Image 1 (cartoon, rainbow, N blue to C red):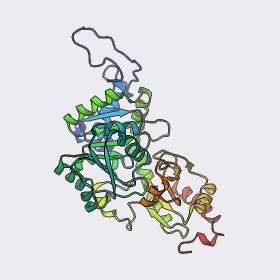
Image 2 (image 1 turned 90 degrees about the horizontal axis):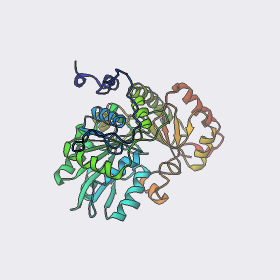
Image 3 (image 1 turned 45 degrees about the vertical axis):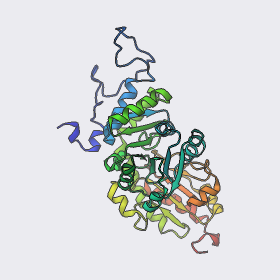
Image 4 (image 1 turned 180 degrees about the vertical axis):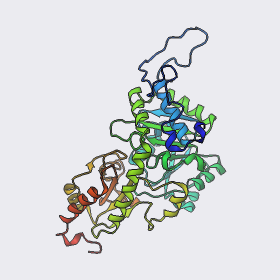
Length: 394
């Protein structure tokens, strides 16, 4: 058998960097060198300066490319560094069509940075293909997709958008942070660039900040490689090693977290104090069938709405198990408040327009026993029951 015939779970452990060819070590060596001696004045070796290439970072880049089914991977100092560098493939005068309920950091980059360089944008509901088509301009050079989106878990048809992009010679970017290649492989559906905040599920332990990108062809790889070297926001070697270690347990972590997320979403959907649950697994989700078609599962992140901000504050103050924090995709469950955390960069008017209300919570399900999570949520809800205004329809 070869690596190409292995299942995804096996590839996480048995890939091109399974062992160190020099020592046989089963852990990728951490190479801290910033510079490398050259033995020939006219012919430099593979490594010369670690911003350009480092063997530890290269190992991570190779592994993520294998897992996503791309030709080349790139490791950056954060998810936003990966996204920002990928946006540098665009030029002044270009136009990008982008998911409307996109991560707040991406929103900030597009609206406050790219605009300064003459790159235009249009936010659309990417689940509506007609709306996407209407947003296309003569200068549209890219489509930027988050699917499922953050934080409303809307699902975009990657293949349909990629086809639209190809018809006009534009690029398709897909932020695959929520699902990872364990559940979704956008390059298979025609996307050109896959992006990750590797801080989240890929590393999985709330102990590293990192970003990754994978491209599907060599020409694009050269362009993004040039930008990575020029911009210089590369991932440090210790962090690269931590992501490599985290990747080894990605399948089992995500499988368990997703299983709990499904059960928790159904629990929340049936609770009288919850107004709405956003999660692609639920049959009532508008893109439930599409999610089943293009992904191997719904993931381990969901969001839910209470009646108003007052009730949200009561819930957050009474729940015990989850960490109340920025970020997601960790071994511990993380409860986030998009209005003041992930989407704080988005003005309230823009958030409300997109349905990101002050009564919305995002929940990243960790590895705790789901019964403990349900009991914890139940006791928090119980303390809110005295407020009759809390119930659906009240």
